[in-house]
Length: 250
Image (cartoon, rainbow, N blue to C red; front, side, top):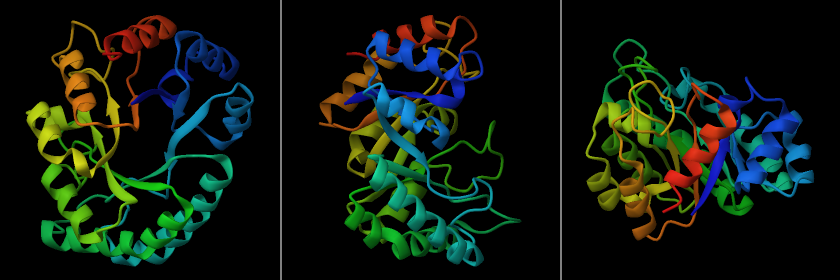
């Protein structure tokens, strides 16, 4: 398993050059969620890109069948770009419930949309990862807000290249029981994100998740993918990145 830096969280305080240099100095070799204008600089530094967005938009996503033509086109285009640039995964979103879209209808629509592009993802060798987000604090009304909802989508798509992005911070808010969930459902997880809860800040003693134990369990499952640190630093961003690397380094 390798640890990555989620670009948007740290680019507000550091220039692109400072962020790339700091990450490399700490020992990170990978970035998440990088705007395409920075891809070349990351590659020039000898680093990789783990995951970027697969389509628009988080709120208006795959659970709405009228979006499927648009999303299919966007994902197919981004699969080609990911393949060309060595990007490992594209992040996908269920979208919001839209005035009461029930769970079964949302699951089937999301799975149907992902089935349309699963074969292309398999051919490209790029994962499509449906992100689990909380609908309590950060993304009110988002539908893929529970592990079981997401797992059911992945089972219905039945592709080795379509899995979940298990965001530890978001699922702590919605469900807790992180370690048991990871042990039970890890086969459906292709990517992880971290942040401290509450607040989405550093992975320190001021928040409630004990990350060393969570990381050990992820390692025990045999996971060999990426863990992206997606927290907003309250203090010095370089020190926060270093602390996360050390806390989660097993």
